[in-house]
Length: 395
Image 1 (tube, rainbow, N blue to C red):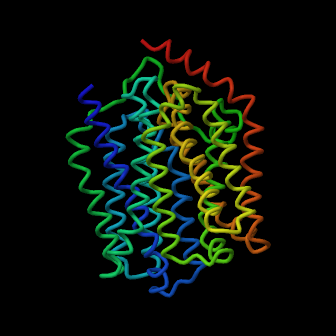
Image 2 (spheres, one colour):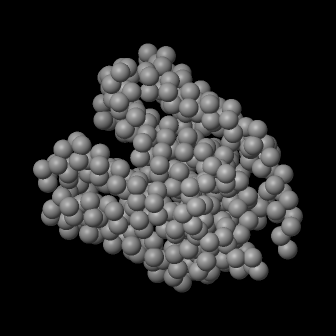
């Protein structure tokens, strides 16, 4: 038990620093691209490149962790992630920026799903939702602190935030090496070997409804993130300082929910119920945004949307883990691929729809979430019984 707590602490710090690194570049990246004669289109392609690499490589890393163990894959991910930031800091040509982001996308997809699979390996079924919530809180906390740290460090040099992010990621390596024992327990049944046919028939995968939820969540969130600043400025004349305060407050709300409430909600109502309600709450927050005409209402409806997402992600990770059998790493990798797919197409569609009318983006996102709820509800209700059966079958 003590070793498990130590391992969870190392994972918490690792995921926190990974997300600090993700957030630290957000206020700096546009200026960095412009410095090398790039434009808005260049920036969009650069951001999409990262998500595309995650989409392509997350299943590979997840299945590799099922085969050779979580620990080596985590060490590869952390070392490569840190190195990619340092390469970015040394970049002096535009192509080097793309190369660094490609590397970062590939290796970050080794870190996140493997860390989630590690948590599921060492956490009992009853406490899994709480463990996933704590990991979600670590990532939310990193997202809160990352942009502020990046903006402060960027004042002293555009490349400094990248060097700091790289060093922070590399500093976790000794702790991961010494305090993370291998969690993967090999059973007599090997994990299914990946094939292109399995990717082409993904819609028949027994966990496809859960992957579809991950896609819907990331698609709507990325649409929201790509248009919210414009919406708040156009509708209510919000400035950067106002947005910074709001995002920090929403991040704190997310941490509080994921660290303190998700586990209790899942234990009381079940994974499927929490996921379905979270989808509806998130959709409600988005559709209410159409009616925003004052700052208090903006805070209220954005908070509702954020709260729904904060309950959704760790609950979804928990249910995917419970229903994965001997393929937890592969399933987590597939989930991240669907998550990345949403982050690839969400900003593009959100921006195009916003040009038609600022309210249409939120209406589209709400409709997407409501439709997803209706489509997955019949199959989602079956998962808790499957999860219980699998848990009771374990020695």
